[in-house]
Picture (cartoon, one colour):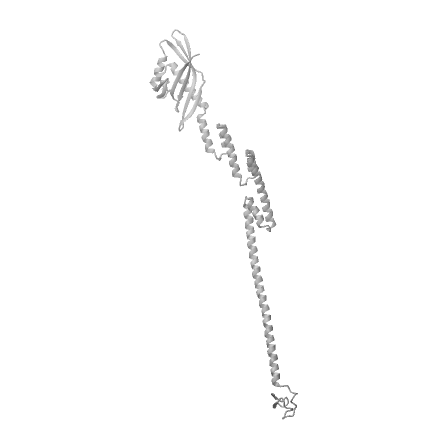
Length: 346
């Protein structure tokens, strides 16, 4: 039982009363308990409130999830941008490095590592690689042939080849070997003409100097001929001063006498002019055999052999001819310091 208010007069009565004692309006079974309605109404409110609370969080979650997904997508997008940007920079750096390289392995490595690179990059690298491979092939052939002409052709065809220095070294070595084999001034001068900055320039100049120091030049022969013609003319003229001007103050040997002096030479001249000699003439046959060698810094020695005919006219006008083989040595000053004569028997 519950106490309710009469819907007609508002008098408080039991919900079990058959009618309102105040106004007579039927009550029992006719009027819904206010408390029940209130309770039901409250229950509906609670349920609605509960439903509203359940719905509201679901909507908010969708918004949050959407925002999170958007942020994730943005982060992923930015990450992808930077990744591909970095990859692009790496590819460009690798491309520039490969194009500047003369190593075929570097170019092949680029092609293997960046198969999806821009087509123009791939084409340029491949073309560059083909050139290097051709150069490598030509170098192998030139190297095997070891021919100067093949090496020169290789350098001409591939001026930027990494093997150019080796090729030039081999060409230099070939020309130097030819110069050494010929061993002449002309051969070494040709080497210097072909390789003004070659590896053997200093040695070539030394060889030229050495050969010249041993080679009898026309001026050497003229000087030697002049000295001995003057020496024997002085003998013929019995000119002591002229005679001694052609000999060294101290001679290592003069006609078998060691450490001879100018006075020994004068004594020899007077000795050959015997009392029955009316005149004497010496004729040099100009058959000089000359050996030239260096004996010190810019010091040259000449060893000379030649023939001379002595013609003696006696006081009774008889003529006698004797042939001599003469060997002598001249020092760097052009003075005789060693002298021997042997009579030739015919």
